[in-house]
Length: 283
Image (cartoon, rainbow, N blue to C red):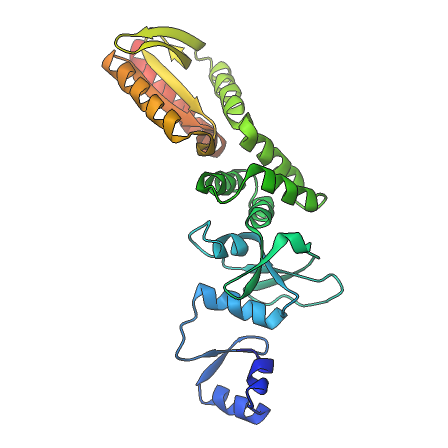
């Protein structure tokens, strides 16, 4: 409850002070109180921040993504956009950002004004950086609750802000560039490490299955490396087809390794070590 709400309910300043002194209420944020009967949860933190900053504030960034149930854990610091005409000092756990969020990118969810899903994801990705931003964007797209076009529109509204160049790259990766980039980076890893004996886009005939084209093959070692982009691009039909194909390859005596853009971005050395270990017996 905010101080203004408490006063509107008939409580005087001295009555509020007595409740605080008695420990019946605690101070959750400036001029915002939490009942001692209520736990200090992540949702309570969001409501406290929204009450403190008032109806003109909008929850943005990872906090907004969490409020939309697109990630599982709320961030330690909640970011709220406040109108640029206001000057508000941030507090521990709450950061006030002077920014006018366009009305089309705002919504009210469970009584809290929050950035729309697409805006929240794009804004959070700009803050999180390439790797963690990619994981967030991939997950949001995979949920079906955020669209690529929606994120593009939100990105246009955020052009020029810190991280907008990173988001532009993430949107290009989401549009299908992640797989091709993952392939190029895997090829470069092998070249730079002096690994030989492999062929890209290798055609082979699988008994009981038919013709398949492997992303990367080591024929002598009978090792295939299948390179994926983001999970967003793998629908149920493709998922089932890939499993049938992989099972046929294993039955035919091939070792199948799967790598993806996220793994290569996070730890390219581990990806290289895995491939080298798989083909080492034939070296």
